Amino acid sequence: MQFTAFAFRDGAAVEGVAVWSVDDEAVASVDAAGVVTGVAAGSVVVSAEVDGVSGQAQVNVTGGPVATRIEVRPEQL
Image 1 (cartoon, rainbow, N blue to C red):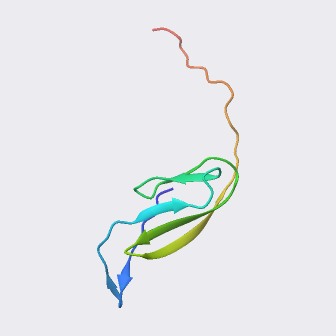
Image 2: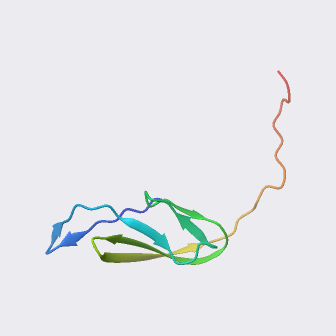
């Protein structure tokens, strides 16, 4: 899931690069672009900080069916 951070000062947009983090890397990870990837079922808080000000969003990661085997057919052409 892609997150975007918008920073404002006195009602006006502020230019800046967001620094992303999660509070539990066992549940999800976040990259420098704000893309969150679930790792395991659970709840995690995603944070973005721009110029010393931060905002958060809570994300619930749910488990789904996991493939245990993949077959590609035909095996040869």
